[in-house]
Image 1: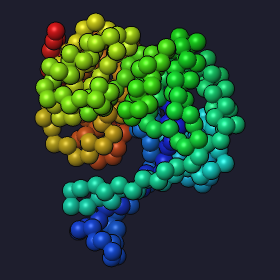
Image 2: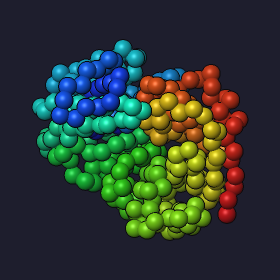
Image 3: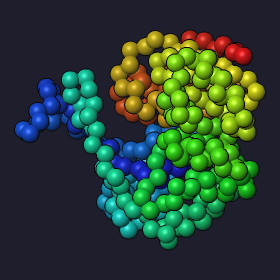
Length: 311
């Protein structure tokens, strides 16, 4: 089973406007979409579509937390969240004129008892887990080394952890004694780690070969429409993805992470795992709904991904 961790989930509310966004005025909404949101829950949805046995965990509170739990149950996704005193957050997207304006709530503050409860529950859950994904930001109240604590617990069970988080939390995990099995930063986040701007992909590749990353088996640097650069153990690849009509690229990185979790769970060989996972990101971008892929398209997309070994 694959365990997805979303520590700061949300109810994602999409408001679609017919015309322009009118500031300091009334805006009438033609379409409303509410769904269980958060990077890890996007991963969960894709994993479920890929026929993986998956369980979602994290923190949930209040009526919004109940909404998320019910949404997951309706989709047949197992879940085991820690209940908290504060309410889970809303995140609002205004879709207008081909653009997306987001209003993101900070989210609840987790108290020390809730944090300890999660750590204990996480350790119990790992007894039936083969792969763990950690996605997104930390809610207020948790120490900034909380992901490191989860890495240490997972290491005790010899379970690989796939990490996708923002730059400061990623840096702490990279410097931690127990390393993630895979990290999935974008090029900007890697540049931020080295406090430099990479003008060429060759510069990015050179930094991936530094001792800084030597004990992390997999590094997947996503480049948007330009594909990805991948460190796979001692090998490096440049992946070029097919040009498609992108409808909603939001969540494509989460779909890629789900692809790798599924590939490792199924024991795929390295190059097949890369093509399979990147195909998930491309497929997600072609769908209106975030965290959604078309299984019938995956084989065709995999065939169109050009994978080049680089030195």
